[in-house]
Each structure stands twice: as C-alpha cells, then as structure tokens.
Amino acid sequence: MPEADLSILNRVYEIILDRKENYDENSYVCKLLNHRKGMNKILEKVGEESIETILAVRNEDHKEIVSESSDLIFHLLVMLAANNVTLDEIASELSARHEEMKRD
Image 1: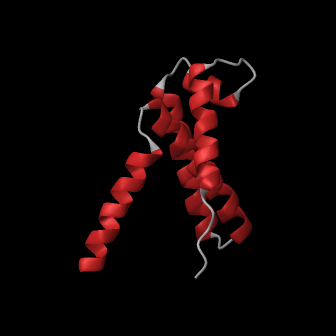
Image 2: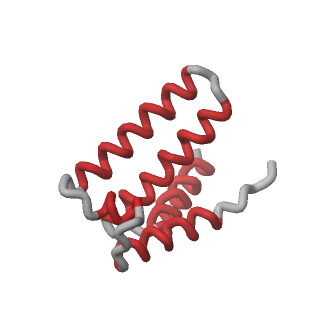
Image 3: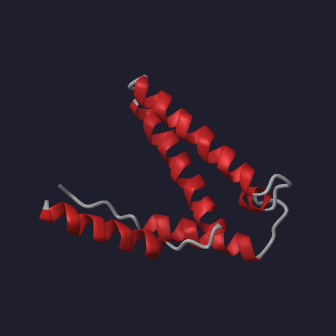
C-alpha cells in the first residue's frame, strides 16, 4: 500500500500558526481564532464538520466523504493550533500507539 505524502498537513498547519501570530482581517483562520465566541466557535466548526462527515459516510458519497473529511481535518488543525498542540506531539502519540498495536 503506497504511503500518502502528508506534508500538506504541515504546510496548512504552518499557515494557521502564521495567521495566529499575524492578524489579517480577510483571513478565515484569523476570524475563527479571534471570534467573539472564542474557542466555542472553533469547537462549533469541528462539531459541524464531524456531523457532515458522518452524513457523507452514511450516504456512501465518496466525493463528499473526501470533501467533508478535509474540512474536518482543517478545523481540527485550527483547534490544535489554538491550543498550542503541535503536529509533532500528535505524530509522537500516534507512533506510540502504533508500537502498542504491533505488540498486541
């Protein structure tokens, strides 16, 4: 099974981090990170995209599964950045879990 090039996740995350540090009034990410609802707005988006992904899967709509999953992952990246969680931390956790699975 070929491995996907997931470097795009790092590039998107870097842009999100840049938007976190450098406000741009035209940036959707800046609007999310600085919304009057604070973290609740980001969590609303994560929840919304989760539900839309679930519905796409339930409807067996491959194109929508890809689209909604991409939206969900993007909003998860915004949530992680807002909480100062790095992709290195996520990768380390997944690696540790992978090692555990190999032992089972």
